[in-house]
Image (cartoon, rainbow, N blue to C red; front, top):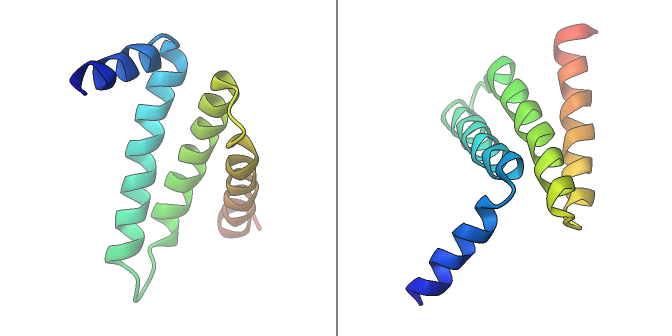
Length: 91
């Protein structure tokens, strides 16, 4: 079992750009989710929307590099987060 786990992480690390993109996107999306959860009664949109947008952009990079079909879902998240960002900061 431990060998399978080690092999999983070795294989994941082969594409260093995708690997570090996944690490960064995880940190950003977890942080955004925490901000939203802790401020749910008065959402801190100016904090979590940029975190979600940056995380979803990094997810696009990693899913593209890995050739994952999850890119469809991630693309949707990126489009929606971009729309929210534009609504919040530009318009």
